[in-house]
Image (cartoon, rainbow, N blue to C red; front, side, top):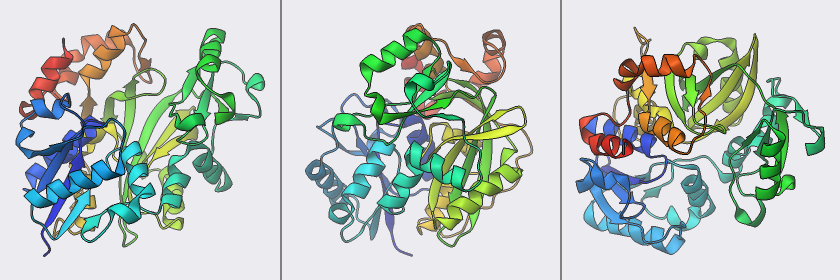
Length: 371
């Protein structure tokens, strides 16, 4: 079996990166961390000895990235080096520069750039789903027709002047004016805002066309559709709704990790978006024994035996207290898909048992987020 080493770019999508590292540690797999800067929280963890290099530039620069990868290769001898597909910006950078990076024994474990963008760009994937009989939110032809509340979504990852924007949830006229000041409306399209339950359908599609699947129900989220801070395991992946996406991804010959966000209003399920990469609450599937990272590692020959997934016998929770505190500090309101703030605060001791960072390896991150 070839000796393989994982290369991890730390500092972004950090909660998923930590969950991935914990999986590598469990299986005693070689890996190297490239930190985003000297301020990367990874320096406060027990994984500090795995940091081989630190980026000097904020922007992803081809010459710097190749130099850092070569530094890893000098210090860790392996037959193949696999770059973890951890963040959206990183994945797009890797695909754009694939020919220059994937030389010799460097592996970028992603589908083609065309397929990746088709799934990751919100407008193109929404259209694809609609064409395949999957329900999407009502779309407004122009901004002036949009009824409050509505969502402004970037058509593509890169907007005017290569700017990057998250979706805007516009609930008031004031929100609308702020949006118009900050963004070019032609970069966006507009959909009705769907209220109701929030689910993530979670998949790993093997290159042999088999699929592993799981799901979570999201309880609490940071405002404007940002990070999930509280979620529980679900059986939503056992529904016919999941089968629609399984068939769709297989028709694209897709392989790898992908998360599909679905909102459920009454008995109707609506596609919100898809992310073909690591996702923040990954510790949930790790704790539940449905570890998609193991599927990924086996698919690319790092683990010799395929993972054995069985139905979890209990409910598992995911929680990120730091994400809640960040929201409170900027005096914003959390988005509650289930329950209310009173229930959250009274049940806090139970949720804290599942906090992503409240563990020995990352306790310093947990502590620093309390300040």
